[in-house]
Every structure is written in C-alpha cells, then in structure tokens.
Image (cartoon, rainbow, N blue to C red; front, side):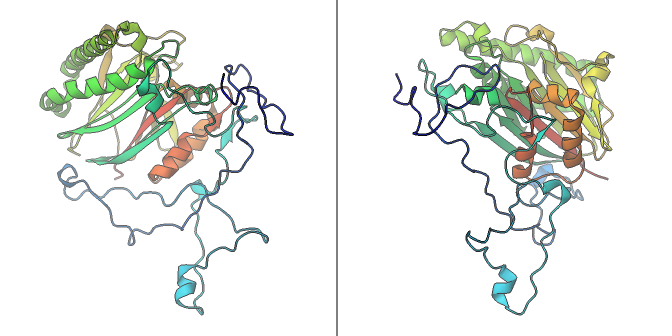
Length: 405
C-alpha cells in the first residue's frame, strides 16, 4: 500500500472526484494552491525580432507572417502587500523618461488558470495532478511527458503542434496515449497525429510507433511523393500512400510481436499531411486511418474537410473506428487541391475534433486566435488546452498557416 493511501492533511476534507472519474488514490497535494503566476515583457516588434528562416527550404522573396508576442497569460500589478513590480528598463536608464504603455493584443488578455468554454467549468483540476508510475516494466509509458509542443517554418507554411494528456488520464495517473509528429525529410514536410485506443493496454506504444514507422516509409519515397504532389496526381499519390501505410503497419505489428504482445494491443488511429517546400506547389497530401479531424479555418469560418469529402453533415467521429496495425487496408488518401494563402489547416485527434465540431463557443475561441497572426509556441499550447466540460481525452493538434498574400 502506498504511504499516502487514505491519508489526508489535518483539517482537509477529501477531494471530490469528477463525475464518472476513474478510481485513484487520494492526493496529498493542495490542488487549490495558485500555480498560475506568469510574467510578460510586452510585445516584440518586427524590428526587434528578426525573422529566423530555415535555409534552403524557404524560397527567395518569401516573407513569413509575424509571430504573436509574449506568453498568453499576463499578470497585473502586485497587490499592496506583495512584492513591488520591477521598474521598467526605460525608467532605469533615465528617471525622467516616461514609461511606454504596455500594449496587450486582444487575443492574449486572459490570465490565471486555463480558460474553459461553456456554462460550467470541467470538474477535473485544470493542471496535472498525479504522475504516471512505472507499471509492469513499461518504461516507455512512464517516461512519456505530459505535454509536447513543437513548431517552425517550412517553405510556404508556419507550423504549430501540441499533444496534451487529457484530464481523465491525468486524474487516473495514466500516461498520454496520443502522439504528434513534425518532421522534415528533404523537400517534404510530414506532420501527423495518432490516437492510441484507450481500451488497449499498450496503445501508447502504437501511437508513437506508427509515427516512427511512417516517417521511415515516407523518407524512402520522398522524391516520388513530391512528384505526385507537384503534378496533382491524386490516384498515384493515394495508391503509394496506401502501400506505405500498409508497410508501416506491418513493421508496427512485428514490433509488438517481438515484445511478446498481440498487435491489437498497439491499436492506434492516424492522420497525416505532406507539404512540399516549393511555394508554387498548391497541393497538400492527406492520409488517415480511423477517427479524428481535418478542418480548415478560412476567413473566420470553419470547414470540416472530411465531412465535405464524404458528402455528409456530421463529422468524421464515430463510436467505432478502424485502427492500425490491423486495419491498414482502410487507409484513405487524397490531395487537398484548393488551398489559399491565409488558410489554416487543423489536423487533430478526436480529443480536439469532437468538441471543435460540436461546440460553437470553442470554434469562436480558437477561430479568433488562430485566424490572425501565428501564435508563438507558448500561446499556441495555452490556446490548445482551452477546456470543455465532458471532453477529457488526450488532445493532439497540428496547425499549418499558409503564407498570407
């Protein structure tokens, strides 16, 4: 028995658990303590922050869109009984100089705990509580971080990506089963998300494993895939991607067997986009197996690209889904041929796709923030974690901002 089991600090009542929450031990940590103190040094001007461009993949004459300034959570002045705020640098240099006013972009005015949309706040704590423990020798699961954030610029797109452990897994001290990928292979960018099936014991191995295997397969066929994207050869692209998904699934199944587990234990969904570095190529390749979402934010409005493809009003989410490594023959691949400058492609697991498709308030919240300047990594992570009651799954998302005209 753990030394903390059934013990609470003196004078503290038992912590109420969320509705339908998994059983877990009592947590001796005071969850009411404030952990939301952030600082902000003000906006970064274009003159003060020169663009950093990744060499040959950025075409001549291409000017990336500006990156949003500062952390999203800003802090007001200290209270009278608290520490004094540090003097502005300008005032320190010259006592007679007037301090410049702090300009805070409208999209970054929130402060304090993670924001939520909807009438009721989620019942789970807003931050990670218990930490996953090493279980049954699963070092991989115990070492997975709670949160991953990534990003960069590649040719005509700016990329932001995040994968966050869901409230339910945090509360039950389980590891993150989602995975996210941002990788460059030559003149091709591959971004992907994968969602390990919660009912399978080692699905986190599957979600991370399928991204590794797919990267290897795409790297071997990079030049051929680029040729299909340049010419818009959708049937050829779909045929090759189906073969590559099948090969990656076979490798994943073999990995499971070598570990003494059935391939089904690694069950995972997959969604991926391929983007050429050449800004004159308008086509983007898309491949998927199982549930999740591919949406587009254009001129302030959301489009469900998979629903449009299927000719139905509902989203791509269902209670039953195909999973790798077993259902590789159900891979769907196609080209996105109507991208425009200023579009934002949003690739996500169902932890974000479900609420984004069903909750207009979440559409408005993210649409306002992602429809303008590209956010910095910290802002993007904070925005990605906006909470919605009853949606407590892992959440992984990759956003691609097409260069503005």
